Image 1 (cartoon, rainbow, N blue to C red):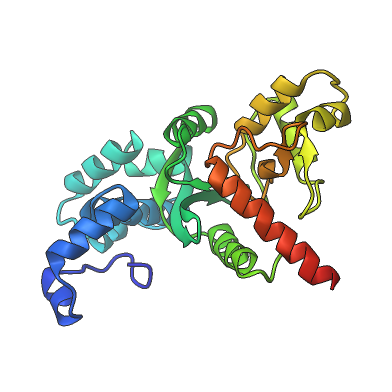
Image 2: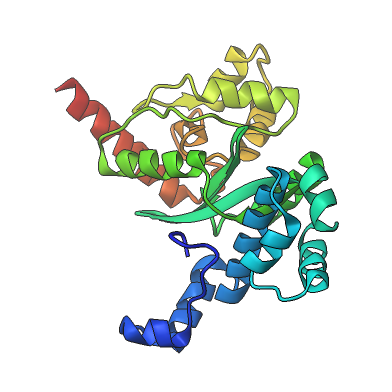
Length: 265
């Protein structure tokens, strides 16, 4: 699908590769949270809309996506984007989503030309609400697809988990209040292998005594690891408040401490 988004993959194709079609359908749905047909359709529609927006012919895209009738193509675009092809291409902003597998579980990454909007664990509570909020605030549609920022994020995350990267170099497109933005910016100044308390972060933000507000702001961060809210702990040294789960927070801190020791050796 990534090599040829407009192509079709049949059960016969899967069988020729030694893959049981029913197993493939079941595992795909479990991994992506949607059927393969729905994924493929959304990916092709997103590609078609980009091409139309770049001046491409609606008719050409109709045939490229396998629609024999113009009305069928228009209806499919309208169902997904809420407008016919030309209007959707003019007015609709697309965010592209991809999933990746890490030692800590599957993660969802969402990006466009503005940068990375989301990078978080798919089982995190509140992630679906974050996607809805993003769509409502930015007036965007999220579709499966490739984007250079998604490719760069996957590559850098792989290096991070492999122990060859401690710092990230990715454009970020955070969406939040002014206070949340300042909290997230400060998080990125905490060096790997070190921690701060919520109180220390509050002082650094010029809000002494606002530890709870800092905790809430950190909890609204949905660009995990790259904006390292896992590096903030309670004043007594205990781990608290991590959307991805405290076991992941502990793993990340231990991993970064090992990287810090090896880099200084």
